[in-house]
Length: 378
Image (cartoon, rainbow, N blue to C red; front, side, top):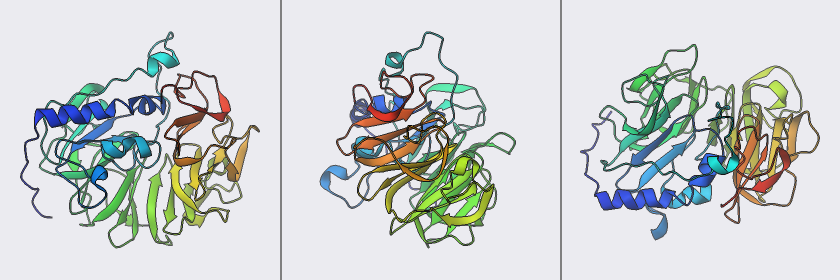
């Protein structure tokens, strides 16, 4: 691996600007699920893209509960898809907590950073803060230790992983019952990745050559997923994984509880990637806990798996082993599947959620509902 580039100081004013940009999107982040650890990266620049899409020195990058990190300039247009995955339910703040309380924006404060430096905050009992300690939580961002300089970060339930500019992966944290690391460690194999997605008990990524690999903890050996098609998107859930090809064809593998693999049956599991039983083409997909959701090429939301709490968006409780169209006529850009609820970003820029609402996590001010409702204030 090449040495990390020299850190470049970021002006205080640029960091303040970046934090201010987050405030407009904070409500959706908080409404979309209990944050099980978040990370931010301060980057110097990113080549390509329209002028308004390029990242500048001082931009703070946020990963919310998993998948890819996006710049704040793009966060509002993609927060519910590739940049966010709700984790399992967390304990409510108090018996008097309300949806309106949970929606109060609170931007994290980073006084100054260096190019490629990573920061994490939230829960830390598995070392997922990456600062060399195992602690219950951190309410403010703490610097991830080590010399690695990151271009992206992805956060799972209790595990975080980052990619440097060359595509090399570093992971920290862990999961119940498996070894954890409170500092970034590079998995063996010297692989380079285009994208990476940590879930609960496994991390999966797509290499620069297009191969799919998964591994169990921060520094275990990545194993190639045999039979995997050429995927361009990957999402690791609690105990299943889904991905999309460049043509938008969906594949899933792992635990098939409640039919969440979408194979059209309820067999226990699939050891190799299996095509979801549909001819639909998707642009976004997310593997949750008990269900999976995706957005079709024409902007419709589809979910499959457990619908016990209406998280699939269908009025009939139960489980579905094939994609079911989400109720209503809302067109979506991206979607994020949680434990018993789902949130998505509409083409109108609004955040929408449906399913269970035990802690005000839907952010809609309404009780549990199978119909997508707009997040208040977004």
